Amino acid sequence: MSSSQLVSQSACAHKLRILADSTRLAVLQMLMEKPLHVQDMNAVLGLEQSLLSHHLKVLRQEGFVTAIRDGKAVLYHLAASVQPAQADRAVDLGCCLLTFE
Image (cartoon, rainbow, N blue to C red; front, side):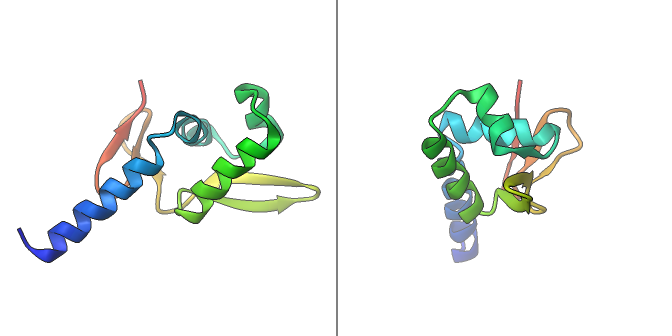
């Protein structure tokens, strides 16, 4: 196995570890549908605001989502690097295809 394959596998494993959290996975799944404000996501998830903010920060730092200020609110989108795949309800992570049932 080459060193580039090991780096690629390590990067893929890191992405999957980030998404192993059910809240982060749920956020990603919701953003597949359309961009959402924090309060819209929280209406579905029912989390403490600080906990949702933490998960969104992790997703932003890892390049899964982007945030745009929308007046006093923040609108979240899937990042360009994490686009819905051709398959229904799936996201191409670059290293693997993540499918939601």
